[in-house]
Length: 122
Image 1 (cartoon, rainbow, N blue to C red):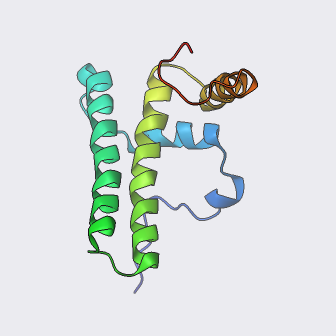
Image 2: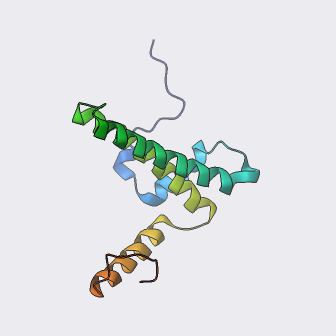
Image 3: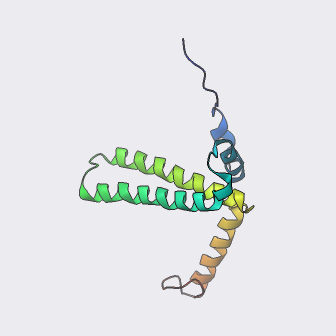
């Protein structure tokens, strides 16, 4: 007998967009709500660290099969995306707003030929 999953994601990939995903993350958000922002910021940093850890091991030669490395990165990047989406949701920021602002900032830097360099206000 095959046990049915409690939460079925079948068909989600057909309709997935940033806002659908951001709202969906609410269903998997299990953490202390009184320390939500702190928890999410630390979680994001932790998951970025896991991405870097996989890359470090790849550089060292631990992951010899490129496909395994790619799959591991996709899994970790998904966790990064979950934390990013949760942070956006708790701050009531639309994920597309973040993307558009970033695109505008980087396009402006390209136009002014200052894409390289340091500082947020260059």
